[in-house]
Each structure stands twice: as structure tokens, then as C-alpha cells.
Length: 152
Image (cartoon, rainbow, N blue to C red; front, side, top):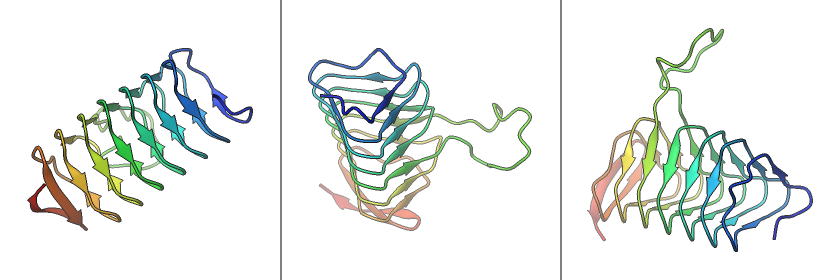
């Protein structure tokens, strides 16, 4: 089901995926099968989302993010793609960084994921965290900046 107020600019939405009210799916986005995209979610140009992912209300997933399968993004999560954002912008491609979110990652509410990192398979990020470095598989991280706390 795609809500009538959603803005969908991509034609690559997987079977069984639901997109709720006022969400914006940009051009060249690929969303896998059986995903749920909550209300007021923005997904930037070219983002790739695997199967069975849940992106909750108010999340901002900007260009440069690749997400594996079975990823949970809680409400208010923000990703970035410009390591040193500033204006005016003539050519920001030198500052652009991609972010990889592997399978089975869970990111808590209102967390910020700084670009240029990889969240390895099974990583859990606690609510309100600012993630500035790549994680190890099955690790639990939280804080500002997020730090390793324990294994799952």
C-alpha cells in the first residue's frame, strides 16, 4: 500500500512494501520486498534499501546510503553524506561520503549516522547516539559519540 500523500519518484519499489503518509521517495531509489516506510520519511536519490526493512516515522535517509536486509531504523534517525557541510556549494563531490548499513542492523530513535562509515551486520545503536566511526558485527554502541559497550 502506498498512501495517496506519498511522493514517489522511483519505480523500483519491491512487492509488499508499504509507504505511509507524506513520505518522499526520490529518484533512483531501490526499495526491496516487504518493507515498511513510515510517515514523513525522506529517502534521497539513489539510496538502496534491502528486503524486510522498517524505516520509522520522521527518518531522513540521504543520498549515499546502502542498506542491507532486515534493518530497523527508529523514528527520527538522520544519516548524512557531506563530511564538512558548508555554503556556498560549488562542487561538494570531494566531501561526499557513502554509508553502508549491513544486514540486521538496528538504529535507535533520534540517532545521527555520520557519513563515510559501515555499520557491520547485527550492530545495535542505542537511542540518541551520534555514530562517527564504523562498527564491528554484533556490537552494541551508544552515546555521543557512540562507543562500543558490549557484544549482543
